Figure 1 (cartoon, one colour):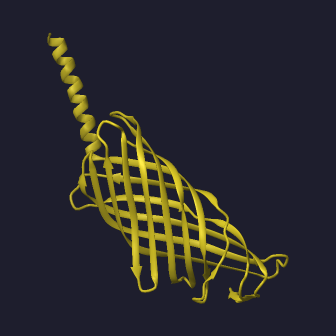
Figure 2 (figure 1 turned 180 degrees about the vertical axis):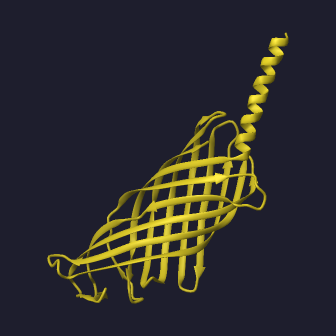
Figure 3 (figure 1 turned 120 degrees about the vertical axis):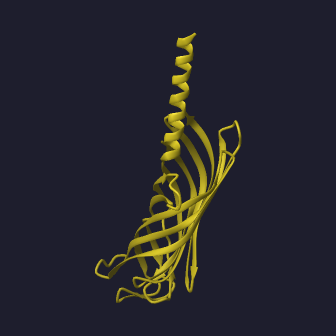
Length: 252
């Protein structure tokens, strides 16, 4: 009898320790495969020209660290590749990088772009049924746009640009008890003068694994990133990246 009581006490103690460890520090890591469609255009003179871009499957990766320390925000880092290429017949002449590209010529365009989000947020409400996060996002945009006239490699221009954009961040998640099913909506937004950026995603989730050591869920959702930038490091953009994604997240 005493041995049974001791064994039960050890099990309870271990369970309590595991619960407290998760409360003290939680790490979330995830990866998504995004079926990305790109539309819009760019310029270096506030006179954007629309271009055609190929659809791409891109990767997005993130890690978040949550803790119970009062007044200290949780942090999340997310990195998304947005590079793509395209071929366009110009409907009008354009000057880019001091090079003149004439109307009705075909140009090849290469967009090499990375979006990195540095997010600080607070959990205002958090339980198994619903959670709500609110914070700020310093989105870093780093890119290079290359344009070349098809058939004339000497007629080309390339410009790189980089900068931080401050944004508001929020996330709402809900769960369906005893099913493993859930859903979330997450996004960042900025509207200031002629700059407008919105980065939203919504997904349905399903828990594949749930134990004291690790949780794992799969995601099926849709993401849209609009990037209207006015003179970011000399570049003007009006891009939209959108499409469905699948992902997996683990929680240690």
